[in-house]
Length: 178
Image 1 (tube, rainbow, N blue to C red):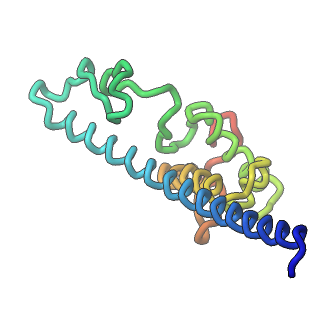
Image 2 (cartoon, one colour; image 1 turned 120 degrees about the vertical axis):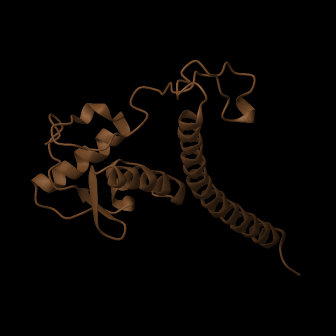
Image 3 (cartoon, one colour; image 1 turned 180 degrees about the vertical axis):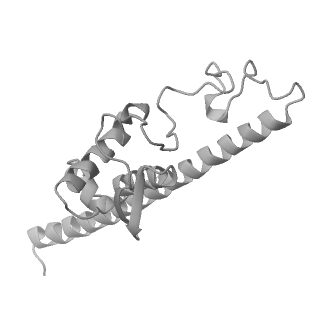
């Protein structure tokens, strides 16, 4: 007959395994949610652009109010075209200062600029998360990956190999961006 302590240890081990499995599933769902939110935001932007082009008053919709998410219906809607300062990443061009992007993007650029200055190679998203002192879990890594991919799409970063990121040619130093 098994001892009471042995039975308790078995139940504890089973519970621990269940908790670990649920945590892994939660991390996977968080990563999937981050990707879905990014896709949703891109569709909202596309719809706004189409609305602006197709507006009957020649594209002037600055005073039109929208509510992008039904959950936000009780909140005061923001006027169309109003964006938070630095919430969008502009396309990089010669002489554009890093201050035009948010602090999160500036941190990414700074780490990669330091690596370029030290003649070190590209970074993966996991390495970047570790450099920021973040937990290297799928949700955090995927959120960071979406930011880095956005910087690549706007010309700030280059992706010389799949999942490896470095500063784009011409981008350097936080001052003038050139």
